[in-house]
Length: 105
Image (cartoon, rainbow, N blue to C red):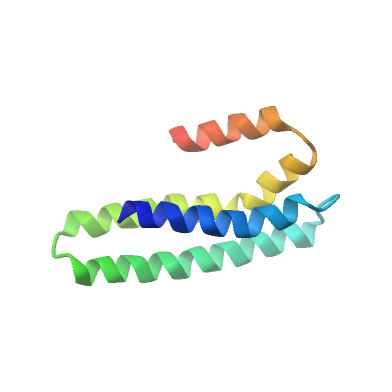
């Protein structure tokens, strides 16, 4: 079940970040749109997934773990505009440090 959350995260992250990273530069509107659109999509899908797990499993710990994994999904999708900006500027060291910190935390 947690793998489903990670799969959604990879799908939506690539859907948002890749088109932004292909541009020459990002405007405030681009970053704002990706932030709010990604946040809205992540919240809706996270809510639906937690409700589905709540009714599918009787174990309270299971849906709490899925809810916690959905927080990672939300933060991952919210950061995609800023990650695309780092890719455009070719700041791969900052990108690697940020990615590593996100995986550890």
